[in-house]
Length: 186
Length: 186
Image 1 (cartoon, rainbow over the protein chains, first blue to last red):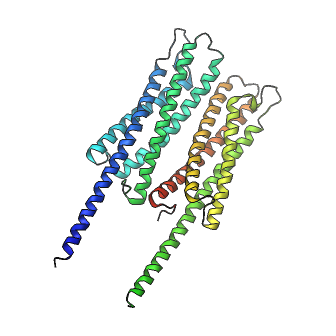
Image 2 (cartoon, chains in turn brown, green; image 1 turned 180 degrees about the horizontal axis):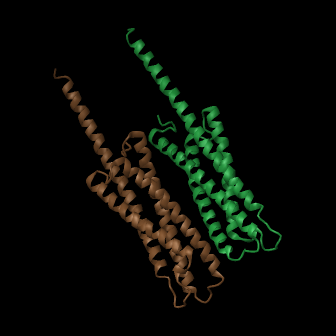
C-alpha cells in the first residue's frame, strides 16, 4: 500500500520542478520581449516627435503639408502607443504570471498587431523616404527641414527593426500555443 | 515471455499509424504552401512584366527613368524568381518526403527569405505608390503610363499579400523545428 507513495511524490516533485523551470523560462522570454518593446517604443516616439516639430519659418515648409510625412507621423505614433500598451501587458504578465486578456486572445492579439504594424511602419517610412528624395532637389534653401525629416525617418526604421523582432517572438508564442495549447514552450 | 509481444507489436502499429498521419498532414501543409507560393509568383511576375513594358512614345516616360519604379520592378522580379525556386523546393518535398537542403537549413532559409522579401516588396510598392501619387499632377497628357504603373503596383501588393501568408507558414515550420527538432508538428 505504501510503495506507490514515494513514486507519486517523486513524480510530483519532478512535475513541480518542470513547472518552475517553465515559469522561469517564460519570465526570461517575456523580459526579452519587454526590452525589444521598450526599444521600439523609444524609437517610434522619437520619430513621431521629430516629425511633429518639423516646421520651418517659411509658409509651405510644414510636415503636415506633405501626405507622406503625415503618414510617417501617424504610423510611428500608433506604434509608440501600441508598444507602450504592450510593455504594460508584459510587465503585468511578468509580475502576475498571467496574461492581461485570456491567453488565446493575448497571443493572437500580440502577433496580429505586431505583423500589421510592422508592415504599416515599414510602408510609412518608405513613403517618407521617397518623398524626402523628391524634395532633395527643391529644398536647398532650407536644409534643416530636410535633415530633420531624414532623422525622423531613420528613427522610424529603427523602431520598425525592433517591432519586427518583437513580432518574431510573439509569432513563436502563437505557434507554442497552437502546438501545446499553452504559451509555455517546455 | 510472449505477453509483451502483442503489446510491442501494437506499439509499432500505433507508431506507424502516427507516422503515416504525420506524413500526410505535412503533405497537405506543403500543398497549401505551394498554392500560396504559386499565387505570389503569378502576381509578382505580372507586376514586374507590367512595369517592364511601361514605356510610352515620349522620351521621358519610361519606367526606368524613375528610381521608385525601378525599385518596384527589381523587388517584384526577385520575389517572382524566389517564389519559382520555392515552388520547385515544395514539389520536391511533396514528391520525395525530404527537403532540398538539410532540414535545418531549409526551414531557416525559407522563413528568413520570406520575411526579408515580404518587407522588401512592401517597401518597393509603397515607394512606387508615393511616386505614382506625385506624378498624378504632371501626367494628364499620358494617362496610360500612370494607369499601367498603378496596375503594376496593385499586382505587386497582391504578390506581397500571398508572400506574407507564406511567411506565416514557414514561420510555423521554424517553430515546429525549434520545439520538436523536426518540421513535423504532430
